[in-house]
Image (spheres, rainbow over the protein chains, first blue to last red):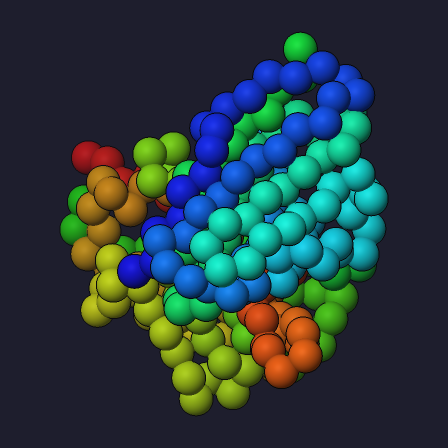
Length: 106
Length: 125
């Protein structure tokens, strides 16, 4: 199985801050990488697919980068509504998720 | 509006069975691969099973193969998950998810573009 490791597991930042979340795959997954946002009591929401393609309707402050084994999700200017848990997911071989990064607003 | 609504969760005893349903609306259900994913506080998100539109291909995670069966009824726009031999480790929120392929050059990249809110399953005596 391909393991996905996210860091950090949680972070706290202020409104307007630029934050980055890292995701590392245990083997080369090309760009077979998606990012999801999950808020309590709500369905996960797809933000980015193919490592860097922003989904329709997702705010432009979200961006993704990377290929191979190392990927990054960036929020350019953190907003209060971005408080959530973020997950990466590979679809290169089967489908596995990272353990999540909880983002809190200071 | 594209919508996926799960039902059928609840409390079940260890060794018992449960059948989950997912009602799809707002899109042509018969054209899409569909997926079940579950979420637990301890293990996070876990992919469980996929089913092709015509049911000719089905894939399972090792943790549920032989115990869980995914099926669909395209006439009813519905997806199902039959869960047998349940244990405490199966306690989770179960989500119905639509799978789509994004074309990037020569690559077809799968992603889960639409999720239901989930139905909670608790396995306990």
